[in-house]
Length: 388
Image (tube, rainbow, N blue to C red; front, side):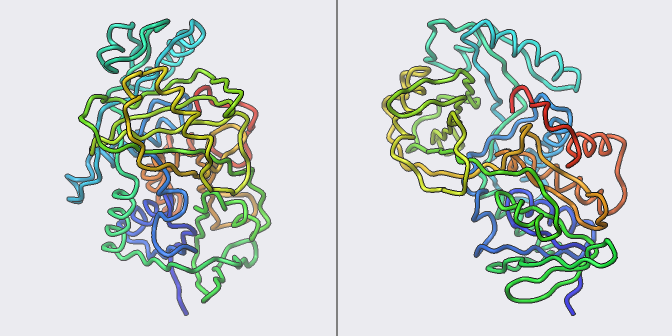
């Protein structure tokens, strides 16, 4: 009989760091993944941005924990994950956005975040060559950064195994066993396993996993496209975020877009379509590149000389309010949600993994209790985060 303390369903941006947090604290941990290796679903499609400058307390605190893990990873474990602490810069071209950013900063500073609003001259220093026409300023949070999603996922996977975590790939969970209101194990397409705790870290497929125990989680995937250029000499430091809507009758409308230069000199970029594209289709489209290229070149004209290496399309496991769903559920002991990351699972994952361990170990802090209340399945989903 295969018995474990915890079974994690999904070896992605949440499942792998959760396995590490559990295993390094002595929990006998099994991770079940339907794909052939870690981070082969939506995780490898993340662009690598990591920030704690959110406008929701729970996400701020989780990402504070994550940033500590990312920024000290090489020192702690010895792996190079491509970490760069170059910050995030949100640019303002309208009075409405300038006001929004300044109001957000008041909240963010109240939680101890290092972020300020700067005028056009500082923004031009941060983003050399930025379009000055109408530029009012922007925010800059220097402690935020970026790292390679694939390097981190595999480094995290190797460390988790060193601490004793088991990973079974090409193995899909098809049933979750319960007995007297408590989870007891899972059935896969290959075998049966037993554990006192089951973690749903199913990403875009979290809804299907939850249905195995008759729980409905409001997680519905939407697709976003991203791309990467050939490497060029380093000239941009922060992640650049433009939240202005884009109207394009030929290629389609969009909301915000963002880009940065990674540690290898490549420009990585992503865009949010408008309206959202719901479903599981992850095939890249012919409209994405001309759609985002037009917007990026308008903001930073020197980008017109970039050669694009490839584009791809991934799924955001979205919730109605743009925040994750984390924690225990009513009337079913041992089952824990870690779902609905809304495209931010990469930056939330390490901090979330530590929180999951404290849930399992029954060692929650008062801050943890606040986080879990804000991210509860039973919360009011009508209050959408200002900059999700």
